[in-house]
Length: 359
Image (cartoon, rainbow, N blue to C red; front, side, top):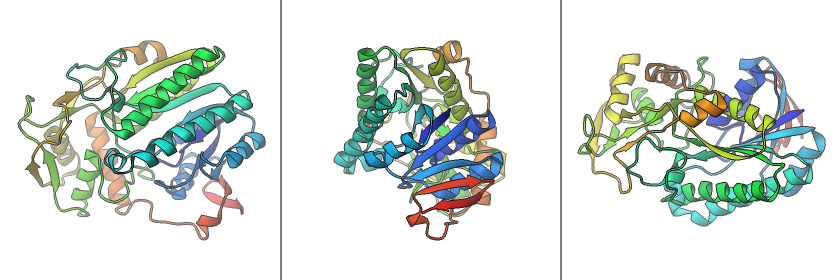
């Protein structure tokens, strides 16, 4: 029995694939590589020393998706695939709604057809919108404030309706806070397109000389140093959270939401200092005006995940910074290696990072 990982070449998806393989799961990956690269999957195979198959296709392509379910004995699904940039979503809302929501509807339709009813969904803390309540609990008021967050919230509601209509479904909604860090090998990490939207890749690209200076948006918040506080979680801890959620859905029915964070926050300048201390690299920054909608403080209450999933983040902010820098230093331009004729490869089997292709 296999676990289907949609968007498995992405930042969180690739780290989750490593953890799944290391725990003995058979995985099948689907990715259209719109914001990821096949090289990430080759490196997953290198790290684990195990083979797995991936399909270069889109969830919007129903025929291709059904082919995957026909070819493999799939037992459960971890669903990462989707557009993910908050700023971009405000410029292209129709594309975000169509891709993220329609893709999920097609996935659920095929899952239902093939009696695959165990699902772990990659949601986001953006479903909470702007809130002054901290720590944020799963029962906090929901109200996303941008199209990206609203796609996550709408999908959550769709999955709730699905689970309520058919009690045989088992679904976990994982609301992440701020993933950072990279695999300790330095082989896989966050590889944003263009200028990063998130703090840590921006810091690391300044440190490596790819960007000139870090912009800090606001230094007059009611916090320890005036900069915004967020809950940063190591991506490997987050990946392990998906394994715990997968174990949960395999043993239960119904639907539940879980916060995945550390339960504490760090300010922007605390993260900058931690990075400088961990790497001995100076990170110049300049303060700019606050961004509209940014909360002063945001961090998770992770009690529910601890109790029901048996999961807790364990890696420190120092480890997050060290692992980020190892990845960035070793890969200043991210996944720049491309496979010959990559765009024509539909289905590929990776064996210890050596590709055997079916075109």
